[in-house]
Image (tube, rainbow, N blue to C red; front, side, top):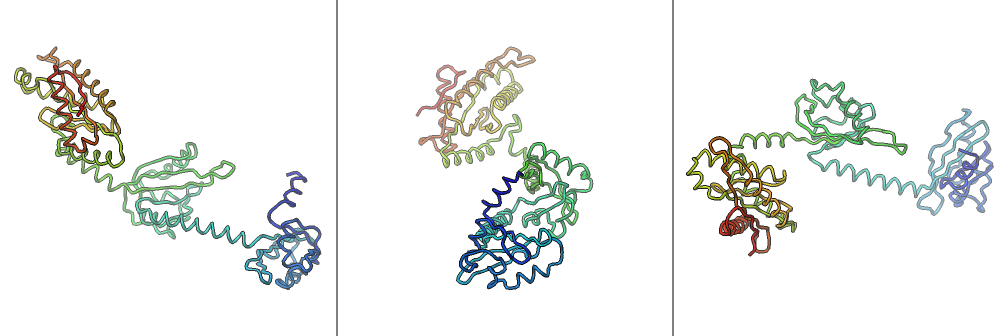
Length: 415
């Protein structure tokens, strides 16, 4: 920093600076110091610091004279309150060389306000961290040592703060997880990308394990360097158990022949989507896919052919649909496709793709060359169609119109 910059800092700083000798005589003082010390100075003149504050700090001169070290802090944040003032100033005196001192004066009111705001922010942060039930929030240093620990972290990890703060983060991992490399590798990845996410087992203090999803975010200083990491861990054990339960119950939720949602499951999912669409005024469209001449062709070529045809329809519907769409078998040979956040026009486009693909589908074996078409009805949630049953009725009407018009067609419902 240049001498000119130092001079500007001294003159313009919001904190008061006063250079004095060991007798208290003021050599130079900036504007902030003179302003903050005015209530203490007789006649408004700041000539001798010890005299100026004599009524509120009469022992300041003796404390300076008793300080025998060549340099150091003589007085640290001494609060001075002038008569009639509700809030005063903080005074610190530093000996910078034999016979030379610098007094630093700051506004106690502004500092108190800042401290109050900081305290409020800390209380809010603690309230948020404490209120979150499923997420543990804590911080670690750049070398992977736990630096802070929230109440939520105690609940999720079941480690008390006194036992984990100051300890390596690796203690939260099971012994066989390869913690020697896992923690530094995770932190390094957060360094490069700003954050990283990992899922795996975590260890409680008693040695029991739980499945967790963890997000590590790099914290950076004003110079861009990493100063530590925030870690948010969610206990996903229950989610895993539910996923396993769903897999175990697949036989009751999935159609045994085609693998798509069974009728009951489809209705449950569709009812939820219809309610959500109406609540948030979002579009929702349904397709009803019905094979043309299914019973006649199944009787001609056999049940095995009919089963293969149904599996082909289900496969094409899933291939053409998005992951957010729901495909279900809702009748003996009928399939429905539910399209969240999709208007009727989008449903017509998807229906046409399914129709064209089924028209080009080739069966193998003895039925090579047999082509099977479908008729598809499309309807959208509206003021007139407000339920799953209403969607099925509307799409069913559209399918009948397509079949009456010659089959192998897509028809949108128009009340």
